[in-house]
Image (cartoon, rainbow, N blue to C red):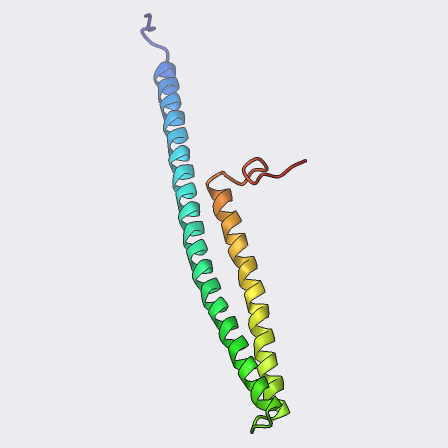
Length: 130
């Protein structure tokens, strides 16, 4: 190995430059790893939240169906239920079914976001054919 006696600091500057570039690349890699970990954690939490909300909306739809059936039967039997109550019951049932469709969509989107964040959102992984 040869080292010139005096080069005006060029060799030391080149060494420091390369060392700083190496540190920069390491810091960029660490940042990318942390960003990916944050994205995966966020996607997982979103999936869990969407799943819980979907289950609650399913229960809401079942309750609305049971209530609608009861109100309709009472109306048809000539009980104290009015046409307005039947219409309100059907409106509640319709709104709960719309909420169910929306929450199912949100759940699927959160699944795809999780797959994307872990690198599994590929045509092969999803069994898509050409």
